[in-house]
Image (cartoon, rainbow, N blue to C red; front, side, top):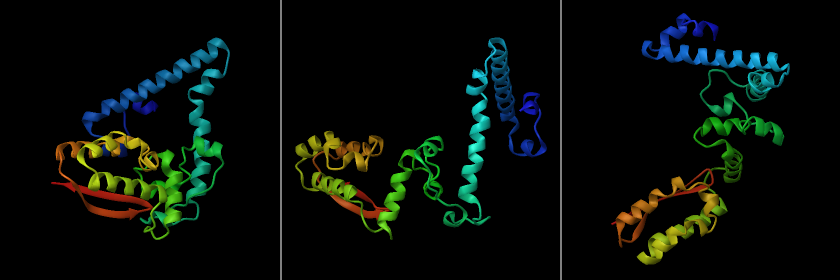
Length: 217
């Protein structure tokens, strides 16, 4: 950090940090040093460790926990292996450690599906275990898909529109879509389709979740 604040990079860093981006590295290091300097000044001026505990301290005791967490997940596993089932493991943790680690103890799941948010990792692991070979659908996901098929394929256009507006009341709706941004694009497609009935174009089961595609026109 001191080296970066002084406007210097190591040879390796200079090799991969573009020249036009280096000023950002220097600026960030100087901001961090300024924050630490103010923190130390507050601690000395008010004669309390509280500023250090709140700023800078988490980097020390937080990083210490990370070493223990990483050791349990990677010790004895394969090195230079691309298969995440062989180079890492999922470990059980108490609620406190899971909170501090943001559920990253579900490490195999995290590496295999990095776009799954941390709060859904326990559910992902449960679905993976329950689905076994991946072809068995989660009951909630199947109920929502059955409702979706009924609405898109067999319902009249007006009833279809009303059902989609109130989609959150469908069976297991929030279980299938905890957040609506992955579901709302369907509303745009249905709106563009007008009165055209829907037809199923795809149905599959992936890790216990039913995945469907519909076409109109």
